[in-house]
Amino acid sequence: MLTINLSNAKSFVSDEELASYLPKLEDADRKLREGSGKGSDFLGWLTLPEQYDREELTRIKAAAKKIQSDSKVLVVIGIGGSYLGARAVIEFLRSPQYNLLPKDTPEIYFAGNNLNADAANEIITLIGDRDFSVNVISKSGTTTEPAVLFRVFRELLVKRYGEKGAASRIYATTDKARGALKTLATAEGYESFVIPDNIGGRYSVLTAVGLLPIAVAGIDVDALMDGAHGAMEAFKEKGLDNPAWAYAACRNALLAKGKRIELLACYDPAFRFMAEWWKQLYGESEGKDGTGIFPASVDLTADLHSMGQYIQDGARCLMETVVHIGRSNTRLRVPDDAQNLDGLNFLSGKDLLEVNEQAFRGTILAHVDGGVPNMVVNLEEKTEKALGEMIYFFEYACGLSGYVLGVNPFDQPGVEAYKKNMFALLGKPGYEDRARELAARL
Image (cartoon, rainbow, N blue to C red):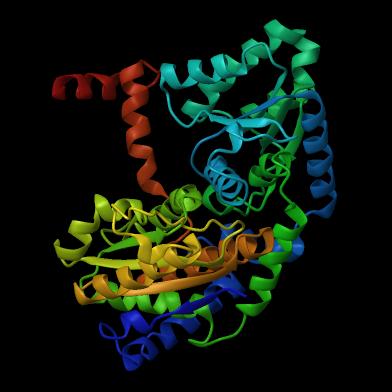
């Protein structure tokens, strides 16, 4: 089971200071479990590992097998929580080079998370003349980026397979009853999966939003859900022995001491998109009302050669959370060199896991000495079950931490401002006055 080590934060916050957060954590936990806090309409993720729709999961696994059998490529169209979780899980459990490696599952490309023509055309080029399917993910069907790219890839499907053939290769993950995408899916006969009304996008990775692409990649979604369920049960314990409570208490205590930026780090490059998922989860949940901890990330050891200087000696506004993975899936030993021109024969015969481990330990001590408190989240291994535990850990701790901070962890009012400006500048009907105001400022 996932654990947390706060020993390298204790020189910055005492046990007494952490304990002082217990009343707030108890109140936050009560708000989550009773649904009495702000945003209580979006708490479905809290019991999802136990109450998920087994019948739909069976359909998801069947759809994944169909895609695997009739397509060499799956294009996943979505933005924010509609793609980050799936990509994070696939890259972490399979590989960041998933599409390049030999395998018996389709390549998976993610579109609709930007409006860049080069990026879209590159995916089209990579598909070439191979068979492909599309999973379009949108609650409303009107979010600009995925809606525009769905038009592009739907047109490509229709040209290649005809209207009926295209419909059999489009899988819509959307609202269960309403919205533009649901209306289209019903009219065209797309197989559809549900984005639950009570789960927001950034908490949706363990719903059909994430599970269909994850299953297509050949990942055991049952084990993933089993891990999340184990964490759900374990984290019902009250007190600082609960890793989620301890994490929420420590990061809020450090914020009170001026540590306004949290770096999420891992010594495995496959973790990169897990960090991107985490940044959305915490950034959208906490960054409001003029407060919140700014979520950032680094890939270690690589970023020690670019960001390491700032972490060690820059403004002392940082805290660091390191996800430590106990075991790697493969082994590689450092060979001996008779000439020893690089002076590294002291590493000869050592496994890279050991070398990486000592880099992790030495860096933590250096950063703590430089004024950066460290929290370590320990993951036993890179498996579906362990990852399910970690996903639930970060989600639950985020809900707790947001309520401790005093904000609604489940809304995101700030994301609408850019959309209104973009619509006005693009000439959307009804935005004429705003367009004139913006034009005067540009």
